[in-house]
Image (cartoon, rainbow, N blue to C red):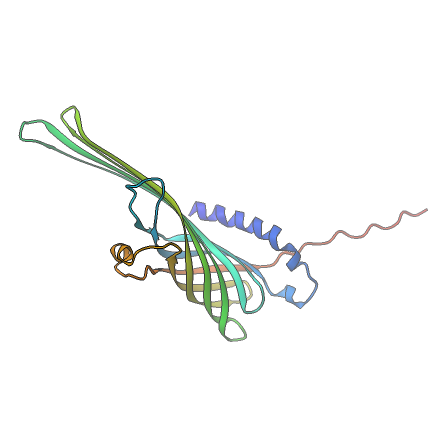
Length: 247
């Protein structure tokens, strides 16, 4: 949760620099908040493919629950934005026993995985109601996933190591993503948003590999999220013109 708050602060700073010119226009649209940041509870599943190790087999990665969202409204129907999620997992296990010769035996397992995901989506409002407060949207864009893992197995018999295996893999995957969403604006600033999206890795993969990893041959994975946004504008005051010095 602490990492999400840090990301939100960083995102807010970036939005200031990127979109100040848009929000500095003197017209009625200044009254409608164009930028947003938020926090989501989400469940994201993706296929992960690795490079650099022949023994690093593809896998599925599940990221949850918290992510930070950010975005910008282009007009009353069109928005662009995304959300960022990072996850670190680490596990250790050990089993011990005695073999037929009376020697102690043990097996140690160590696993570590570091992942982050960044969906970048455009959303268009297909249906609007209650003066634009309620919207049903269609989503489309790309998703970036970075995934890295380390797996280690050590098996000993007495003082002797009889088996040792080490495996690691890392990869940056790109997916085509699409979906639907709904949102409702409370007042002027707070908005509840829920999305369902589907992603497919932009990589030539045999249907049998998809079937082995996901149980389907299409390679489609699903993500669900629900969150709360805070909408806002930036008002940048221009410096007052300097008056000519009195002679």
